[in-house]
Length: 273
Ligand code: ATR
Image 1 (cartoon, rainbow, N blue to C red):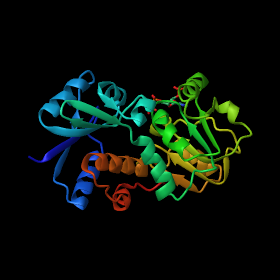
Image 2 (cartoon, rainbow, N blue to C red; image 1 turned 90 degrees about the vertical axis):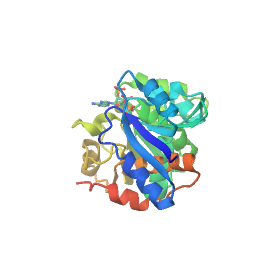
Image 3 (spheres, rainbow, N blue to C red; image 1 turned 30 degrees about the vertical axis):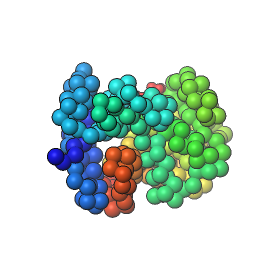
Image 4 (cartoon, rainbow, N blue to C red; image 1 turned 90 degrees about the horizontal axis):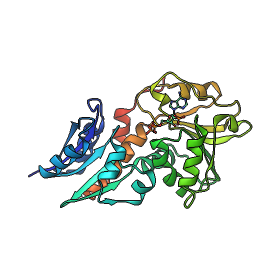
């Protein structure tokens, strides 16, 4: 029987994961099936267990189930433990292993695809939700000079500093506290990429030649990217590379072969206009 995988979310119709994994499977000659499953909002556990019972080998998990994906795991890996969330599950008998590849995907996109080494850089993440939690450890492992988190609700950012204190020396606060500071890489991990709301970023935040990275993908110039552009930043990126790179990590974890990502990223890229 062909090995079966799926992405589970709600809603799921617009997920690019089936296309990405089918392209990976073709390119690496892996016999596998990959579908999209919409779980009821109160039915994530049942959906996963049914898929396992039907012979499923693993799933990607997207909004709003990443926390539940971590909770259902019998064997959460370090990345998932620290994020408190998982975006990939692998089934071994009745064991459920959980990983969080979002942060690794982000780092790989920034360093490998966008050619921006993070070591020694001043890096700022805007937002302190699940997307930021997933990104912090992989970013810290690159040894930036400063890793800062700014959030509308400053207390949530301070909570992150406490939660990650054993691993990372985070600088945390509200946006007003960023006045006078300059960063080489600024990442928007808030949900404002899906709305029309700009962030209250102070003037002078972006260093010359800074990279402005929007985690949301396929939306063209989001309010954050427009702000960066208006501040003179020419190196703008959205999260399409992060999406494809995290998918490649999951694929490699499941199948033991890492697919090339360049042509898949090119196919999915929406121009930033
Ligand atoms: P995710 O899992 O995608 O990170 P989340 O956990 O709901 O989603 O977090 C959303 C993030 O976007 C939070 O950091 C939130 O800030 P608050 O903690 O203050 O709520 C941030 N966010 C959402 N709307 C925002 C806005 N209009 N301005 C600034 N930050 C916003």
